[in-house]
Length: 352
Image 1 (tube, rainbow, N blue to C red):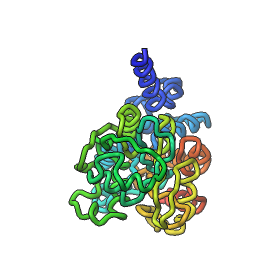
Image 2 (image 1 turned 180 degrees about the vertical axis):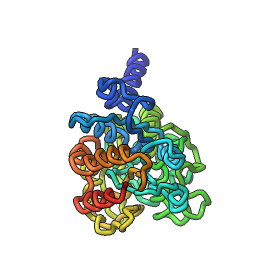
Image 3 (image 1 turned 180 degrees about the horizontal axis):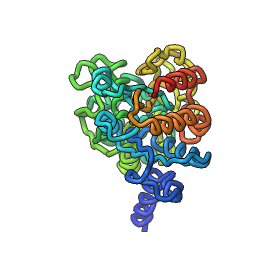
Image 4 (image 1 turned 90 degrees about the horizontal axis):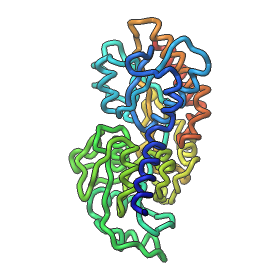
């Protein structure tokens, strides 16, 4: 009976995570990749919010439809560069060399931001687990192999950690979430930075690692793998009911992930946004900043061959940067600081 209940719960979890807004989408005349007027593709990290944006934007009565295909940042960039979509989406933005390969030109638009958490599965361990920068880096380097390691125990005095093997859960697909997480590890650890493929959308993970596709796949594997720990977008981890570690930031303070962690960190760092709107925050300043935060971007063409598509993409993006921001916190994302949203709207005027 217990096994049957576990399987049933797994199915419900999958439905809840992967199909958060699919029912509403289905109700809108079964909009698909093939029949939508505007098609975007890319990052899974912000996908629940983007789907909600489309749902709410359609209520305003535009004379066109939108479809977003959450295929991961790597695949999204490839489709955007091949000009097979009307916009892309990536948690890693785009490199200069990639942008130079897009003939119509590229305009990066920061759309929202979120935090990456380290979610774990330790049976009977309900207390908040504290992990230092050195310790969680060594976990993903494969150097800490058991949960009752002295270094983890020292950070959590009075708690009885289980004698279990540590199993890391990582992304098996090309992922902007992986890029943001490994960029953070490289910023805080010389050993990680010097290991070769330290930063990337897909890396060779050392130690006892297993892979999952998309943020949802990682969340489900953590939920049902005893002794596991993995990196995943906060909103998805929250909806999956996963325990999340409290992490040490740059200032030596331990910050618990919650609905406000991303917003506080963006406020602490928004003045650093450069003119091209491509800002990474691999190790944010501020005593109250959560350590693993990333903007995520929409990728627009500077020059669309179809003027109608240009105006439709701009109309949706403009709505997302203004009205759409109020939905961000509902899904565990951080609304853009007003100054960043204003800069993004100004950059939108360069799209023709």
